[in-house]
Image (cartoon, rainbow, N blue to C red; front, side, top):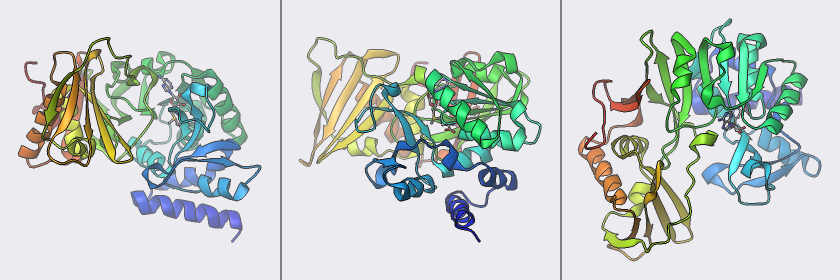
Length: 382
Ligand SMILES: C[S@@+](CC[C@H](N)C(=O)[O-])C[C@H]1O[C@@H](n2cnc3c(N)ncnc32)[C@H](O)[C@@H]1O
């Protein structure tokens, strides 16, 4: 056995440790399309909550570079702040080669068959587009990337790997109508609203798999089956933390020039910061609000924002003093209280887990449901 075979064998085994036995076509694709061909010489390895991200440089430390490339659980960040900042800055991650175990898990959900026509949204390094090309034939894969420079690098990568999928520079939120209808739509950036265009461009019986992020709680995937009546219905599955699709980046606009109203909460902010997936989905469904959290030394800050109205938001902070914590609210909407009410409704339902939740997407929008599509969770008054 060569060193290369040994590394690849361990890589596949590590992925299977995390996601279970791989379907044969996915294992074959992972064996045929080496991740290393898609990783730039200098990038940022991101071990998530295990450790701090660190720069890898193939020239100065090839062992560390290979170690990161062969780590099944870690994404490798390839761009910061849309390319305006370097890897030594602490800007937002805007492109990456996703964690191999998550890539495999999403491909399992996608269940492609040879001959399927696939639309990928978010080409990134091109690795997924090449894996899909191996599985269904490159001439049937279209991959859309919003950043022209990233798409150009991906084109080089896929070509070195020996594939020629159709790479398009554009906004994948609008799909790519020229190639429709697709059997599968595979999204590799996260959404909190599923664009209806993906449903329109997928044939009846086809599948859409997309990472779904609500802010707090791990991301998860939504797997939707498209119907002939133009709706798509499916459940939340697996875990998938991805950077957001560009139009759904939740950015906090500058604070309006008003003093925030101050009250206090007896709900420990960490309860919301660490909300399990079912609670996070309930909060998203019942409030439509985006919740994010950050730990900073001894403090945990939690922000709540109406993504459609920057003037409706609140921030609270946990500190070690027990009992109550301050809430700073902007706008009249009591967004923190809405979030905690939704959390306690989830508790009162017996804390259902992620797999009991699903979503329906229609031309009028999306709705999240519990157990059955007719048990839709709605915001009070809607
Ligand atoms: C996690 S990376 C994708 C990883 C990729 N599938 C791979 O195999 O390397 C997410 C990508 O989505 C891209 N992206 C973000 N918004 C997009 C949009 N509206 N349309 C197309 N691509 C988008 C980002 O530029 C980024 O390259």
